[in-house]
Amino acid sequence: MTDGFNRELGARIKRYRVLRGLTQSDLGEAIGVSFQQLQKQESGANRISAEQLVKLAAALELSPMDLLLDVPGEALGPELRRQDLVLYSALSKCSVRQKRVIAEMLEAFL
Image 1 (cartoon, rainbow, N blue to C red):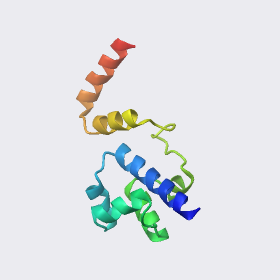
Image 2: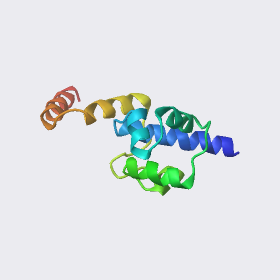
Image 3: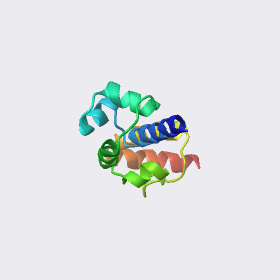
Image 4: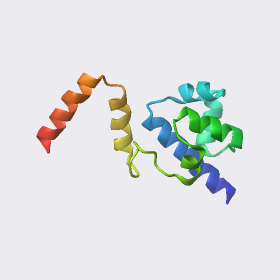
């Protein structure tokens, strides 16, 4: 049972990391571990201590309970599909002006 929990927690961390537009190296550096260690945590191969959970949540601008209970943060909305994550990640890197132009283009398609 704990293996399933470790995998699910790791998947949540990965999803929120991608939503924030962070690489494994970025997040690993923010919490003081290598990207390889973070990769193992995201896959569920390595367990995450309570201390690491608190650091991960802070780096992802979430509360530890958001990660444990998978309660989406205010700006994250409902469960997202992979293509939604890719779009969100790309948009997070755009300037305000670029986002405005993209929004106008999308509205023209709808």
